[in-house]
Length: 77
Image (tube, one colour):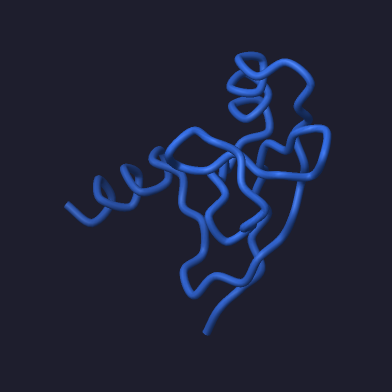
């Protein structure tokens, strides 16, 4: 069972996305994805003229935060 998750990516003025290799491409499947808008905004400051765009995608795994995972591990112990 899957779910929709919110992600953020950095786009330049012509609609290309920042990739994992830190270059811009029209291939949105190669986009560097951020879980947090603040983290994406901080990275976007390194690339003048870019914007942070929000999008949703399907994921087979729900998002877990590290603090939640640690709480579950502690309560299981």
